[in-house]
Length: 126
Image 1 (tube, rainbow, N blue to C red):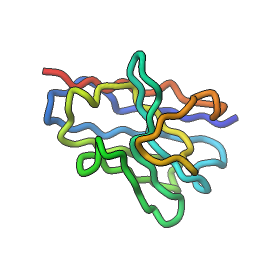
Image 2: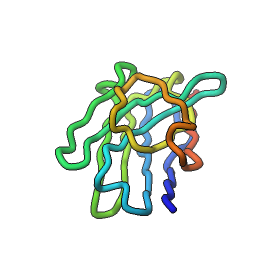
Image 3: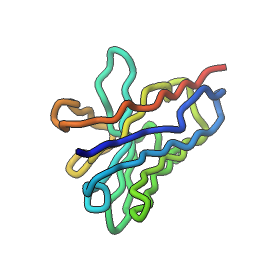
Image 4: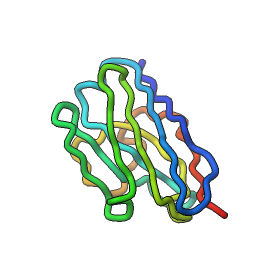
């Protein structure tokens, strides 16, 4: 059974930084395009960044471009999201999952994926 475990969230002041990690078990990680999603109460889950499995090509939603950096370590089955210059509107629960045919900035139906981790809460507030 595939497991995704996100960590690294917390409370940070505007302008601060956080680094999120996603540890994946099973065989999906090294072969799949992966992404970071976020969701706030009352809103749909949005893909904010994705990275291809081999080329490591990345793409970002306009709202985070230039501030967030996604990376991966296939040997460790781990996905990362470095978040700099954080804003209050970045406050959300952040999740990792596959992102093969999804453009950053688009919303998704979580039920289409079959499995999710518990997510990690990021709160940006002074």
